[in-house]
Image (cartoon, rainbow, N blue to C red; front, side, top):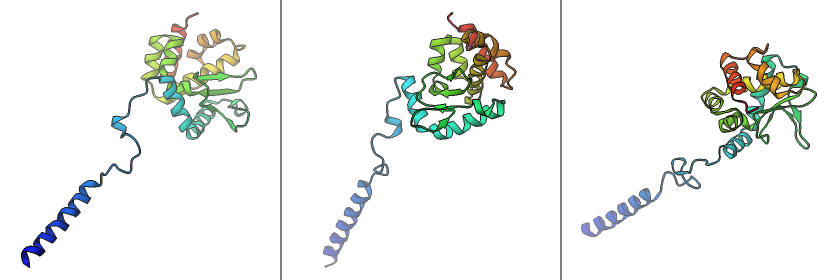
Length: 185
């Protein structure tokens, strides 16, 4: 009897062990674990995806920073058809934009240093990539602000942004200067 009971208990023990090992702690995950997922091959697509996923909190930060910089609240953001008024538009691939009446928006380019490098040269792209998001944002907002102040002239904005009256960071001024120096006129 003792031998038979031992064998039954051993089988039960083995069965429970198999069940314990069969349950993979990552089994609740759908798809590949993050460490095995491929990196984004298209920086613009990655910037757009990130921007869309986190659009709401990014918008709050962009609006807040524009107010801190002294941008007129009536000039912060615009409304797209079928959407709420907002200052951050993830569907805009460029870093920023300004309307003829001076309303400023920031786009997914805030997260895409490759776009900056493409338009303003490698030095500007590297500086942009190595900068905090706050400094990137300051340089974008100041550029769009200056563009409107100077008759919607992109070239004039490039020249004026490094010395803007807006209280942007020194790093943002350096980004603006690198953009000015790298612009392919």
